Length: 112
Image 1 (cartoon, rainbow, N blue to C red):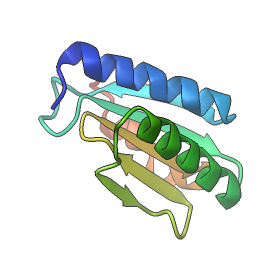
Image 2 (spheres, one colour):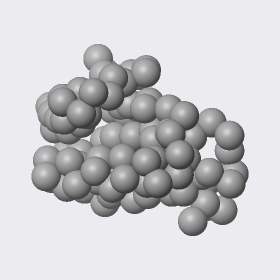
Image 3 (cartoon, one colour):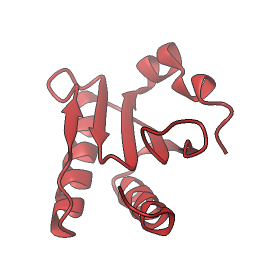
């Protein structure tokens, strides 16, 4: 696991990558004090399955260039909710309707 400053910098970089790929409604939830699983959840939406995969591919590629491999990927094939697990930072990329349905922001509302 990274120290707090490293995980914060990783989170900020991922947010900039998401913004560069036109991800919608990017939200960061600081989960460090709520969970020993990860420091940050980053949640965003895309407009289509192609857009979701494009966002995920960009994050994976940019972090690979920095020497970081994704520990686990979920949902890439169906592309309605793609999860990229970088241990200290977990990225959730949703179709807008699935994001509303699962509403994980509500589940982690106590995060900063």
